Image 1 (tube, rainbow, N blue to C red):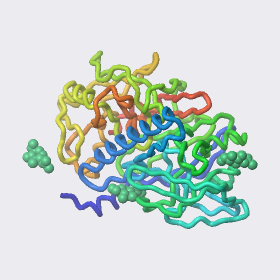
Image 2: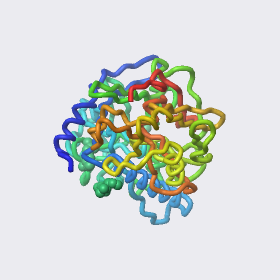
Image 3: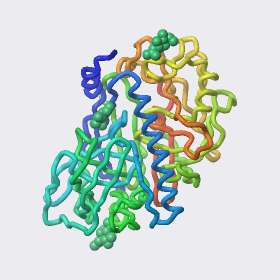
Image 4: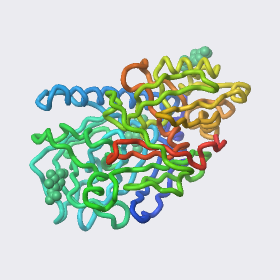
Length: 416
Ligand SMILES: *[C@@H]1O[C@H](CO)[C@@H](O)[C@H](O)[C@H]1NC(C)=O
Ligand SMILES: *[C@@H]1O[C@H](CO)[C@@H](O)[C@H](O)[C@H]1NC(C)=O
Ligand SMILES: *[C@@H]1O[C@H](CO)[C@@H](O)[C@H](O)[C@H]1NC(C)=O
């Protein structure tokens, strides 16, 4: 077995990011954040990703059903796997005036913003209690408490007034941060308030846009491949894209209408391998920063395994290939609309310098494409996770109901 405690400590040291100061460039706003890989032993990476996938599917279906059945239906709304994730992003967010800073987990798979898990809410003259209580259950935790509106500060000096904040009186499953900054689609907040269950809660992105601070209600994400133990840079921009972080132009894709993918940042996409081997026919899935791997439906995963000749490594839970198979490994092509994004052979590898962090052997070659844990045809058949997004700049555009991708200077990097 693994020395899990020392492994965790090493890992967090290895890939923590030093937050950059906030930059306001023309019309958009950059929020610095720290990224950590939170993997606590063998198989943990795959288990966490699959648990999150399962939670997103279940939660998305429950939300879609709630909409169909009408708001009076007493539909239990369950589970988004936000706390038990392998790639964790934490930003420092100020609340109140003068502001108190809270470490909030950034999540594209949920949309409530709340605090109080570890640090108590400090009320100031800008804090206003509403008549609602608020509660959300996540895959591995929950919170409930009171809704306030307050002034929220992102970085140094960028303020949002009248932001709804959940103030936890009870929370479970949260250690190491004070709450969540939810930047998923606004509809995910449906039925989280009580008694005002029909109201949606504007996210920080929505309020930045409605208060005229940013021109468009969107968030863009830049990641760079994680290599060795050096500093990794990530950048979240509100209101616009940062042209210094991508090459060419952004291709936009309309959101899917298929549930449950449509509850999240969902798109339709097909995947092929090499010169025309179909891995996944065009189907709905999601783009998610909180999933580390690229997860595809079980039948597609089996086809990928056959095409690459990989075997399932039972220590890490990842597919493993030999050096000879790596020499022959072909690109994976992700096609959406009329645009194809090529994920190179190197981009399909788990960074070899981080093999030991996931319980692997440093001389092995592991792949980042893994099993979603359900067959295709269920309305959420893939997740383009962090290992995809570190190769393609991504844009989550609420105003125009679309997701965008662009190539970057890291798309064809051979850093793994
Ligand atoms: C890391 O994962 C463990 C479970 O494996 C969880 O208890 C802990 O809260 C996570 N830490 C963070 C910062 O997400
Ligand atoms: C404050 O925000 C809430 C929604 O969170 C909205 O219902 C209310 O009208 C807003 N109040 C003002 C003064 O803008
Ligand atoms: C992993 O696979 C090997 C060979 O297939 C087997 O001997 C071993 O018991 C397996 N280990 C676990 C933990 O399943």
